[in-house]
Amino acid sequence: SSYHHTKELEEYLKGVHAAYPSLTHLHSIGRSVEGRDLWVLVLGRFPTHHNIGIPEFKYVANMHGDETVGREVLLHLIDFLVTSYGRDPVITRLLNNTRVHIMPTMNPDGFEATKEPDCYYTRGRYNRNGADLNRNFPDAFENNSAGIQPETRAVMDWIKNETFVLSANLHGGALVASYTFDNVTGSLNGYSRSPDDDVFVHLAKTYSSNHASMYKGTGCDNRQTFPEGITNGYSWYQLEGGMQDYNYVWGQCFEITLELSCCKYPPAEQLEKFWRDNKVALIEYIKQVHLGVKGQVTDKNGNPIPNAIVEAKGRPHVCPYRTNEQGEYFLLLLPGTYVINATVPGFKSMLKTVEIPDNTGNFSALKQDFSFSEVSDQIRSRVASCPKIPLYQELARTSAAVKPTLNILVLMTIILVIFK
Ligand SMILES: [Zn+2]
Image (tube, rainbow, N blue to C red):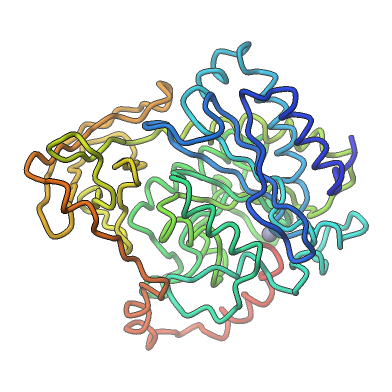
């Protein structure tokens, strides 16, 4: 097979939608600097809209225009999903219980600017304005002075408008599954741990262990090894304005970064093999959207309460996770016992202890609703506030005095910045 450039990509997606009109929904979430559509194909039993209880999942590829494997692998995935639906019982159940959003390219201009397959860094990494889109998001730890690009803005709006629970963004130039945080919380101890670190480790291992070779952790040369094929983003190298931290902090969506190929833009003859190497991992990863617990928060009349805070005790998000317009929440948690705290701001909290089983095989998280019998309609108009300012900045500042190996870190960042 050969690479799909803009025209072929659009024809491909429109062809799939025409062949599977009730299983797919094709839309553009915005345009690149040069005016190319940012296409998203949605797959599921109800592809055009959110349904209560059905979590939203997304894959985004090619945000670095010269990292091309993910772009093509996602087209293979689309083909596999639509042709398996109704035939393969696992894929059928998966798509009946999950809404899957696939964006093959977030940086179509960069892809078109990369003329020849090249294993190494090229200018096509950036968008048409020369911006690195994976440094272009608001950052939880420091002020990001980069002007928000059209491609970034489109993705931010998309995240705001959907109830995404889990996602991955696909890159090239290494072979590893990297997870949040990419920037630093408190101290430079070589690992930037989120409150959901156990879940992120599980998610990254789910991908690497189901990949043909990523789990071996040998990386791409002798310079670096990644035990079990995973790494904390910050442990690998620090970056500001990355998409995965943004998803987790502001999008209520757990996202990991998948580096799929040592060669950023390999010859087209290798694409089939990349698809075979990633096929099982891509499917198993989607299933993880059904980890944990989900439910609805309602008032005395059974009406949904939007913007209620629902969190698991002991793992508070710096920007608390809130219910959507339908009063729904989704919390990705590993099997175990948890206390779930539902709070209607300014009113009251309700605690429930839940025993979460390993339920990804059931294609449904544990269901736990919260009914606030004392809450009436007035309380519902409260607006959630989560400012786009660096939320962890105070933490970072207090630890700024401890930077013993700063020069080495700066040097390593310069060396490694070409990868992600
Ligand atoms: Zn990249």
